[in-house]
Every structure is written in structure tokens, then in C-alpha cells.
Length: 314
Ligand SMILES: Nc1ncnc2c1ncn2[C@@H]1O[C@H](COP(=O)(O)OP(=O)(O)OP(=O)(O)O)[C@@H](O)[C@H]1O
Ligand SMILES: [Mg+2]
Image (cartoon, rainbow, N blue to C red; front, side, top):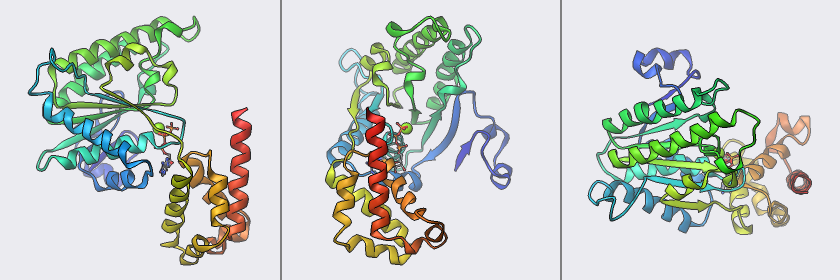
């Protein structure tokens, strides 16, 4: 069961008890693990298997070793950091990793908390620091006392901004203190809670404080998909659509499919999935009957996406 702040439909809300509705400030959602929905997300991300294996191994190690080995021997903080361009699958991998980690420990009840950093940042002086401290020292620490906990810190540059690069705009002292608070709290939690893992993401790693990065047990760069991966993402997307619109599967065997894949090279996974949607919307008629989409529609959408990407890169 997943509890969302401010998003649930009425039936779901009615099924929850008052405590669950009352998620602490800064926590966007809380869900029990394992959760097959997140397993499907993990499977949907097409990336070198070695990357997935490295992530899973590090996450599992976090829950096997930290309670048994002194920090003076292995100074683990319980933080995995995923960096990379927008749309490369970092958040999806982080959520999927939470599921796969929980699944690796039979009979253990894990929980995934997702932090929404923008809920914590406040223009009022000192409030961000207080909100950050409370989130870590109360909400996250309490969850860790209840059982193994994985915390997704998406867009961590918002919370752990590089203190050396702050300008005088945008209340820098407050943000400076918020970064200090994150670092202090990570140290405290690392000492006190061994069954806790943070998975942080950022597409601005250069904006993240180096003291935060230094505390990470593993930093992994999630790359843009290579040609083979682009082909698999496109295929996965079309195969998924063909479950609803069977004629779409014909596109996969078209001689022009490979041209489409070539046009996808340089795009991120999100852009590839979106260009398929653009192809389905190539005309009002196709939008009405998506099974009529042609390989030319797909090729045109891929070329258009590439043009947009190239312009954005200049
Ligand atoms: N390597 C990939 N394989 C398959 N799908 C992908 C891949 N990368 C991204 N996607 C798809 O793109 C969408 C966005 O992914 P996600 O939100 O995880 O990216 P992100 O790296 O967190 O982006 P951002 O940095 O903008 O937050 C998802 O629907 C995901 O399935
Ligand atoms: Mg993301």
C-alpha cells in the first residue's frame, strides 16, 4: 500500500488510517516493500546489467554489513548517489532498487520513503534548516526504528547545494545551513541506524556539495542509452503498446525500424518513449486510432526529437 501526500483518491483515502494520512513534512510518499509495481519499473529501465548488479549489490551490502562491522573499519554512510542527464532513468532505478533490495531479504518488511525536497525549502530565514533537521532526525529516524528503510532523495542538489558556489541571491545563508544540516544528520543517522539506505539522484552533480558526495558509499553515473539500448527501449515501448493495439507490432519488423533506432541515438530514455507518443499523435486521425501509426510517423517523430535535442545542446 502506498500513501501519497495530497494525491489519493477518495476511496484510497478512506481506507487509510489517520496516521498514514499525516505524512511528516518533506515526505511525499511512504510505501511497503517489496512492491511488484516497482519491480516492473526496474525491469523497464534498459541499461547495462552490470550497472543494475552493482547497485543491487551495494544496497544489499548496506543491510548485511553495517550492523556487524564497526564504522572505524568500514565508514559506510548508507548513501548511493545516481547522477546523469535528465530522463536517463535515475528515479526509476532508485525506486526499482528499493524493491529489489527488499525482495533480496525474505520475510523482512522494508519501507520506501520518498522525500520531496521542495516541501522543505522555505524563503523564511532558518526554516529550511529546521525542516531538514526535523525530517532526518525525527521522521526518517523513527521510520528506521520501525524496520529496514530506504529513502529516496530525488534532486538532492536542492537539499545539499554546493556551499562553495552560492551567490548572495536566494537566501544563501539559509541554504548553506540546510546543507550543513543534511551533512550533520547523515553522520548521526549513519552512526545510529544501520538498517537505513538513502538513494539520492541529481542531474546537476556539479551543484551538489562535495562533502555530500564524499559521504556517498557509491556514486554511479547513469549514461544516455547506446544504440543497442535505444533499440531495446523503442522495442519495449512498441511491444507494450501492441498489447493494446496489436497492429503496432508490425513496426518492429519494418526494414525502416533500424533507421528509427539510429535517429534515437543521443536521446535519453524518456525522450525515446515520448517520441513514440508523438508518432501516435502525428495526426488527429492517428491519435483517434493509434493502431494506424506508421513507421514513417515514427521516423519523423524520432527526427523531430533529435532536432529539438540538438538545438537544446547548443
Ligand atoms: N534506460 C532507460 N530504459 C528505458 N526507459 C527509460 C530509460 N531511461 C529513462 N526511461 C524512461 O524515461 C522516463 C523517465 O525516467 P526517470 O524519471 O527515471 O528519469 P530521471 O533520470 O530520474 O530524470 P530526471 O533527471 O529528469 O529526474 C521513465 O518513463 C523511464 O521509463
Ligand atoms: Mg528523476
